Image 1: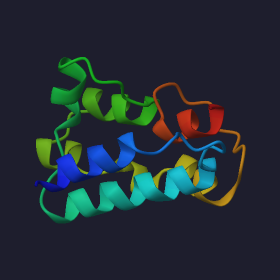
Image 2 (image 1 turned 180 degrees about the horizontal axis):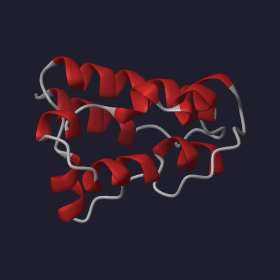
Image 3 (image 1 turned 135 degrees about the horizontal axis):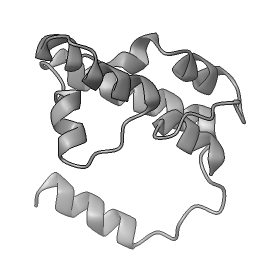
Length: 108
């Protein structure tokens, strides 16, 4: 049995959690996942993500306009973004950037 199938069966046997995960926890998990993905190589080029209809935050969108190389556009701009810092350290962080995943965690 593959891991995916095992996890699907495990999840099917459980009821959804009555209490949603805190936004700070979601933010920390998201940051950890992105960091782990970046360890294995460059991330998807932000320009290609935008062209494929992906949602970008205001800062990621700016990187698609600025004349920089694909290497820089494949880095994780969230690592240096103040929204990440706020999201990981505060509940109900005042983040309002459209397209920012950290803002989404704090809205819901």
